Structure formats: C-alpha cells, structure tokens
Image 1 (spheres, rainbow, N blue to C red):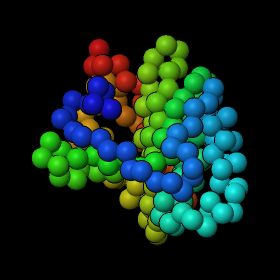
Image 2: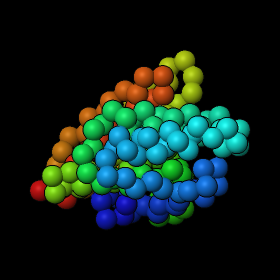
Image 3: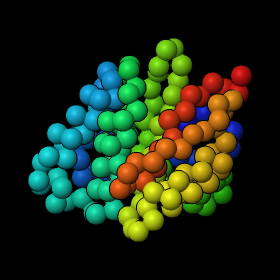
Image 4: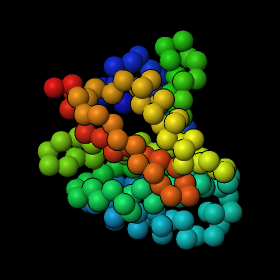
Amino acid sequence: MKQITKSDFQFYYERENYLYTSAIRAKKSEIAAKMLKNILNRQYIINSIPESRLHEIKATYHTLSSIQHPSYILISLNQIKVLDNKGTHVTDLDGIGLGYKNGKLYLLIIEAKIGKNRVSESKKQLKDTLKKLKLKTSAQPTIESITKYGAYCYIEIDGDR
C-alpha cells in the first residue's frame, strides 16, 4: 500500500482468525465471491465472527459479485489499520483487494456500516478515506453503493500519469 499512496502511512494487517485464511486469490472476482460464500456458509465460522466484522465480510462478498473483475484478484479477508507516521490511527480499511485488468493495477476498497444510514455513512467515510490516502492515480474515484451494506471504490492505480 505504501507504494500506491502519496501519504506516509503505516499499514497494519489486523490478525483475525475467524475465517481460517487471511486472503483469497482467484482468477476472477466472481470466483473470489463464490470462494468467500463457501467460507461464509460454514455455521461455526458465522458463529465466531463479531456482527460488525461479519457485515464487512458480507459487503466484500457482494462487492466481488458485482465488480466483474476479469482477471486475477487478491482480496484481504482481514481489516487493514492505517496509522500516520506518529502511530496515530487514521482509518480502517474494511475490505481491500488488488488486481490487474487489461495490464493495469486496480485497487478495491470497501467500507461497510451497520445502522439506519449505512450506505450514505459508508460513502461519506470512504470519500474521506480516499482523500487521506492520496492514491497515486490520475483516475477520479467513483464510489458505488452496496445495497444494505455500505460502499466501495474500484479504481485504476496509474502512478499519476
């Protein structure tokens, strides 16, 4: 992540053992969604995950089902903590993925919320997160809704060409 942001942040992989795996690599986003669905179909896993984290993982599943990424994609199943250079908490990345599409690097960031205004609150926080991260891209971020879950941004990282 440090290579694709302009800000001097520290990124920490939140070590969670709920899903017994920390990432999914798949040939297409639809395949990654099916793999995640298979994991989520295990009742003993569902029972061990806190409600808020389960909601974030389900948001990741729904996002993967909709983005139609046609080539390999790597999805973190654990939350990423973002700290500034003083160690102060900046934000959390509820879901994140990297993949190549047509020879270009794409970043997927997912923000999920539980509550009445979950989609609008998620869009607001994701917009703020993207502003803070200062991604190395000339592409303008588009934030999409994940009905009942939150929002996501799927953006090409081109190094500010």
